[in-house]
Length: 109
Length: 152
Image (cartoon, rainbow over all chains, first blue to last red; front, side):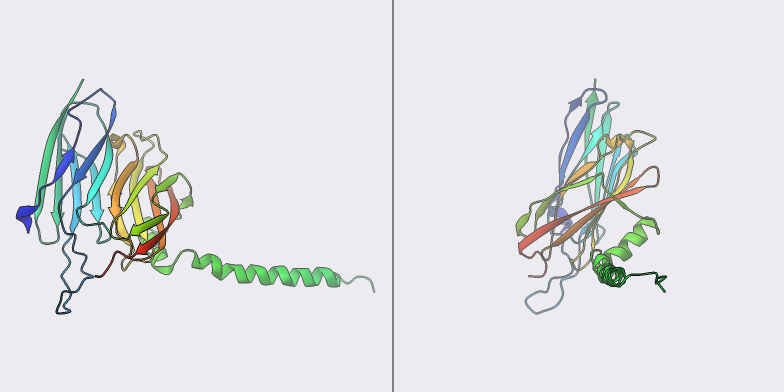
């Protein structure tokens, strides 16, 4: 399950000092809600990405707790004020302990 | 004896108004279903959320309840002293009311986020924003769902 998860992020590579940029993210994940049943009528166990954290140079800038009501392949976007050059690190954690990471640097001029 | 405190007309209108007030009260309470009120109580630790400062952009009619695009924005300068600390999204009629809770900081620059959510049926989405000064603001948005996004 964990192997086929490839997070995609869209982050501008450069920004002006103080500029507020939109950060878009997408993780391929079934977000199995735990509400569904399989053909035999057995409930399909819940497995969702329950947490997404984003840090900039180690400082937390965005942190979200996700519930089963988030659609499959969670696509979440938010904003960031660029005050210095640095690296954004993204981490997604699912119910089965799968951890998925992505990162990108932003050069601020 | 003309000292009767109420005329008949006053008495009747008073009774009618009283009746309306009593009739309205449970209706008003029903506007926030129990599940939401309980969840709100947990989130705000007993505090109240005022209506305003929060905007929810979502389709009026969602054909597919499996993936309903939602954008939430909160009016805030997002400075060290005055910013949004958390945004909570709730859906009253989903199997579980929670949708997403996000923590923001002054580094966010703009208190806005977008995501796609599941709606099991037509219902009201509620968003509560908590501010750095301890206040909380909320907004609601009705979405009609043609095909529900839970189960099957």
